Length: 133
Image (tube, rainbow, N blue to C red; front, top):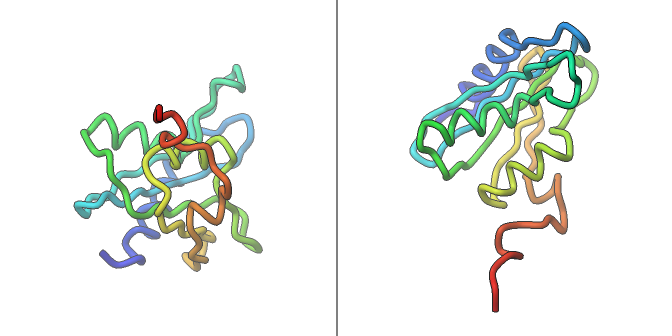
């Protein structure tokens, strides 16, 4: 899989965002270990707390399709002059499905910065912490 395809899919997903309150569209594209790409966009709600971020929409769609193992995610928004990462809640949700994700923070022009989920959420609480000794 080319990173360019993952980045292109997250840019396309951003166009589907439902964000009438914030005007801040976000798109995400997740790469499964099998090579499938699942996208998501943010979906806002008049009761702001019920808004779902693009990253969590993508994870929920992937899980609903039977995927549980992922290797990368690309995320984009409309901010042109800096790379923007997932919010803390999304970082925690992504961590549920493994710590070794590549994360591509993508600008609207398609340029990206590669980082990792572990770098974005150091000292994370993971499912391993719930294992009983």
